[in-house]
Length: 176
Image (cartoon, rainbow, N blue to C red; front, side, top):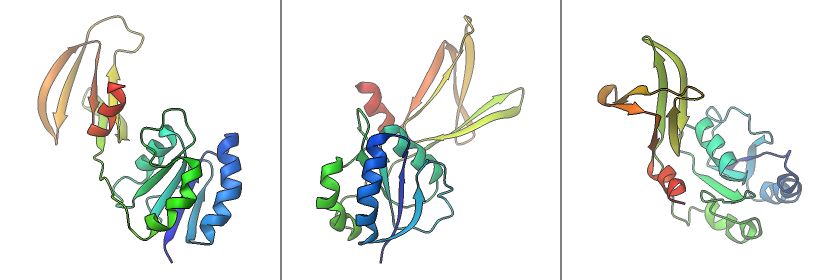
């Protein structure tokens, strides 16, 4: 039996309703190894074959960050507004779930960005992103200098208000 993580923000009424009706249905078809009802579970250490995310793009991005480095496929069920990352609408999960479990679907690998904010030689923040990383001046009204490194090597330096570094996934959202 396939091991599945089910994730979603059950604080949202539509997700909570789907959680109540679809989670038991998923349990009939797969072993649910984690119920991540608040988008806060440690997913990296959980052996799973699939992650089903109930939510919008933000929920899917949250799960992707928490799975970083894991080859587990993620299928998004859209309960958000835009849903450009979600493959399914809520009413189509039942129709496609068995085929997804059987591996009868295309998997689109996604790259991730590992971003660090370094000041005076000290890392002050570190983040992972599937879509993009935005570095900006914040509330300051002056020019900032941003050094861009790729794989530890300085690529270029930007002077301006900020910079957006985007993966192919994120560039889709920016083009909207």
